[in-house]
Image 1 (cartoon, rainbow, N blue to C red):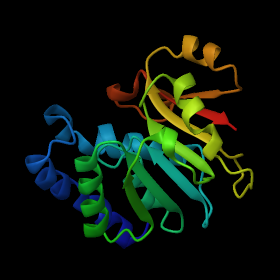
Image 2 (image 1 turned 120 degrees about the vertical axis):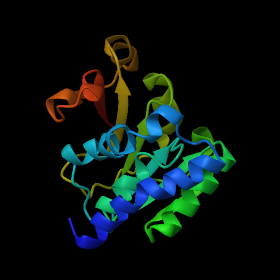
Image 3 (image 1 turned 90 degrees about the vertical axis):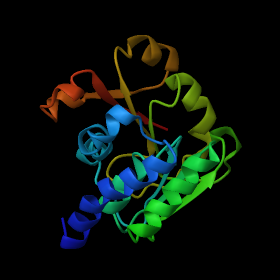
Image 4 (image 1 turned 90 degrees about the horizontal axis):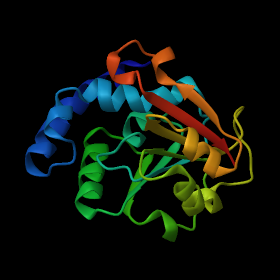
Length: 196
């Protein structure tokens, strides 16, 4: 990690404190645990795949910019398109990305179902039932491969996902985040990879 990336990560908390005091994009209890519950959780995706420069990633239901903004800091050569259906959240994401100097981030108010662009990967944090999410966005996955991991969905979610995976009817790999991080927060957290 470069000094610039360390600086960008360090500047996230004051920026989120400022914006959260104006527009509540992160719950009050979670803002104090920003680095564990949002930044580290988002960066768990990087333990599964190292995105190559030129990769395009869509972050659906980004909320306050997670997992997109931490990943954009870690992978400056990758383009991240962050979308959410709530305009005030996109405004906060745009302001924070600009304050951090993230030229590899674009953000739009949009619903996943309406998106027409193609991306190498789609990332998200527990937006909805996984089979429903798959229906919305599988059309947006590019057939052109750039990375060692085939293009697909990287979905962060907690709890027992057995029923959702069975209903999905597509090959999926579930990574338990408690095997990556020791903090109690990650005990029930999973990263689901669905190649498309």
